[in-house]
Image (cartoon, rainbow, N blue to C red; front, side, top):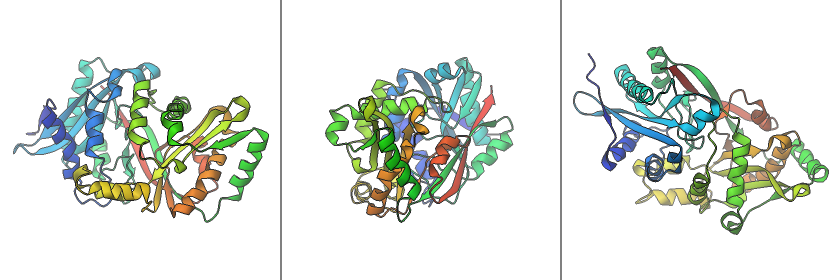
Length: 382
């Protein structure tokens, strides 16, 4: 008989323990990239995360008979996404557990019970509050280094999902490793030069003033909202969320690695954006238990400012639908690839893409690519 006990997070100390469990479970794992403790604390705190304007959540911890913490999970209801997609879903995220089926079962039972109490009909995940939170359980690529924007999990996680029996595929993602070429592929160059003349599109590089005073921070995320609106489970970012992300990510951003494509004929309307950053994977692994202090900040700054890393993360790439066939994405890479070369980057990470999203995957057709990770979102009727 299982002796697993579930405890709801009720205090700040509980929440800190909830976050710290991941660092304990993945201590010294060479592929896991831990999130910053402060980022998780802000995301999971109901008085700090703007997503709670349209979401509600509870967090659960699992303990064995000896009182040791052996698992955790977040149960999230995003009412805006449910309304947009016509579903009654409770999401599960921040899911971690030891290799004991009794633990994983107890955690999912807690999410199911919570969802039913709120009138939900499905349980789906791993998902966060929005698409800018990590999503999808790793099912292939367990020997590949993770990224700051994605989830790493042990191979036994998806095995548990199969053993539990009631979960089925809801959506699958793929991730590509993109090799930085020695020179910009000729196809990108030809398309970029042609569309600048034919469609009057041009590259805009931003300054801090553009981002924080000129409204371009907001414009970029509004563009992302439009580009991503039809993607699986997407929840439109609110103005308050956009403000939070601008304040969180752009003060230390290297703006040379962010490219905006504008349409001059439409009054310099932004039509595509590429937000990329030096890979922080190795730097974050050196942040003890996800803390920047006392020495973690040094490793992060070296990666961000001195580019002491071999990879670049393609965090957010968006092109308005009517400009995809015009080659706006080629113009972005025409600008970004020489910058990657100058910084000495050897490879890039595409981040998660729906396996059925051929439009996105076609962007990489002129690059050497390796499909090196797969992940899944599961569904269970409750």
